[in-house]
Length: 314
Image (tube, helix red, strand yellow):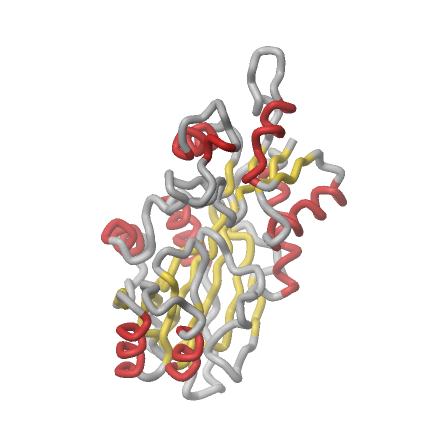
């Protein structure tokens, strides 16, 4: 049995449930804010509720909202921390585990995060926290070129934008929102999707070239294996490693995203990634390294030559 903790707004959760139905895999999809009844119905005579689970997909919706205390949903738990502790202790794959409070144990830009990135041989971009929207805008106006913008509190990834686009994007946030910024060098962008310790697919985007005829050298298996090892070091069983490949061949890691952007992922890759998720959660085994069979070499060339970013996240 596969448990999908997601509401109807989570595109990965919805797509995963449809794929499991086609595969004939037993699953339950449940809004995580309404878990009490589900837990009771899954209890066996010994009082174990998760004995039959082969995997859990946890969507981007937190188990509990700040407005509604956890105890209103789970009378047997005193706090969200207790619930997350039980979820994280399950012996089956849990995509992805969280620390109490719904945050990553190693958030983007933290000293621990930078240490992991460097340990796996990637350059670390200069990350600047804009303590509010106006401060962030002053940074990228000074930089020019392209910038990676991400709300610091977000589990999801950010966007690579031009300075003009970044200013418009910032207007969608609260003026007091803390934004994480990184200057993006001239080059190409690469998304490496890691599932269960293996690279499932890669997406090469045209990025920020001054010369549109320049092309990226082939992605080697060693680089992709480093991505899978890096995701595991960050305790992510489903991740998108966002890399910037400079014109000088240097590879930097802009982010390791624990909630990959569905809408910026090409349609041809969706199906492949969801199938790999289904296999992992159904107990189909866990392999490490580079195992993708997408288009033979696992690379999808997504040519967004008219923009420095992927399509807008919806």
